[in-house]
Image (cartoon, rainbow, N blue to C red):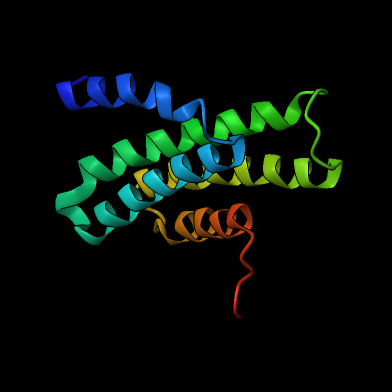
Length: 125
């Protein structure tokens, strides 16, 4: 962990107490999505950054899956099931991307769709 990360954590504690859970989720997903997109645009030279971003994205989705698996989660059951399914898809697809068998595009699309949902915006398709 570098000094920048330590500083961010120290100062984010104050900010996070005023954020809603939804805005925190949005911010985390937005950050990792930006990292994924940036690394993917670098193609092979960005593979180390892509692998790190995929790892963090996987951790994020695992956390979401654990959260929606809890009986205390208040989201509708159907939405919880969909989030769990997406977490499983992300896990599987991430392995394929790391092996060079797939592109990161579907992961980016899922993250962006979740960001739209968290922000209350609908897709314009």
